[in-house]
Image (cartoon, rainbow, N blue to C red; front, top):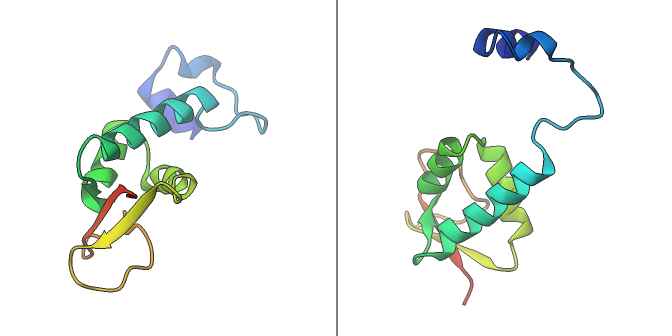
Length: 105
């Protein structure tokens, strides 16, 4: 991680110190992304697992971060199979599955 910081930002990476106390993303960033992701899903009739995965990448978050948020929203969302197979998760990292994640009615 330290090498990556240096290669991306020679000036700011110079003062970078790895601390066990600091999370990778600040609470503000995660809270902001949580609000954005929820609005992204709820602004329409839902989004596919692929759309949510790509939206996370566009906002500099990994599928695991989106999954954490979807877990928090589990009482507000439902996952519907598009491909006719049984549903056992959000499938954000599974390109062979197609599900729709939408607001629960």
